[in-house]
Length: 486
Image (cartoon, rainbow, N blue to C red):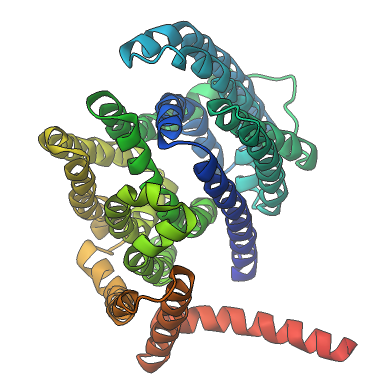
């Protein structure tokens, strides 16, 4: 597959993520000003359960369709009908256990919220295979229109309902409408339709690869969300709201960049799975470029966290700032996780992928159990320790598979991180100038950008030169066309 097609699909995926996250971010800011932290804490509990169950829909079989070299209509149709069945069973399960969950957390109003919000599981069953088809055929342009349609539609409804004083139901409606519109637009824009065919043999074949990824993803999702369940039980809804809100700003960045790379990387690597040298080069490129983009954003966000929260969310959310700084440092190393795991999946080693997840979650569980009794901040700190250990674990197999070990990976990203830290040191003192919050942020952001770009040019950063070689011809071509038209 040529670089132009890969880059084009990455740009479409990146544009889709940026657009969706920008709209979601704006809406969340408006809703955060209208609603109390307790409301967000309640909805966070419900979302945890649905997120865990969504793993059964979004993981395993979809990845098996993308990874399989010769997947055809029979494979896609088989997975489609299988997913629909599973989704309806999961919804029935959530409908029945909703009162028990509400009793456990002593929040009676939780039961109807769970039953309504769980409808997203059924809708996801329709959407999932369409997404796999788009990813496999590298039609990421389709995601752009479906995701933005759902996000904008949900934003309008959510804000109107919040202004009308409908509280938590504004958040419920926002999530349901988002996925419903997203699914509808994807359905009418993607040509693939399920055929009247089903094969248990194909299902077993795909399941033999996919079940390991499913269990891996389930372990990962349960572990990543169990902190929220523990906080909701041992501490207050407000504590849970602050912990969740702390992830909003870092996720706005990490979702745009890392998810875009992740979506494009797996299908591209899968096509080259028999060429270890090519897969290694793609893994290295993904790590260096994404770290170059993400690290200054994470360091900068950590430095600017306090004025940013005060300005956008108001002072009532300032308690989330310490958590946000921890999350920023954790997210800084996401590219190492993503690129290494995609390489392992693309080479068909789902067994190894599962083994790594089990080891990481065993270590992470020990850290969580050790810290959960010492407060929410201690639990957040355990995320940082786990991230460092997980990097080493994820990179370990590729030392043999690709001849690309963790120390070599650190060597590749260290210049990006050092330049980002230097940038952070330069802009941090600006927060003591006692300027208005908006002016302080403008100075820090613009100053940080100047320092980072100047340092990239001065030290001839490899990732900067690579990005420049891609972006400059595109900009030059656009300018040339406009000049000729003028």
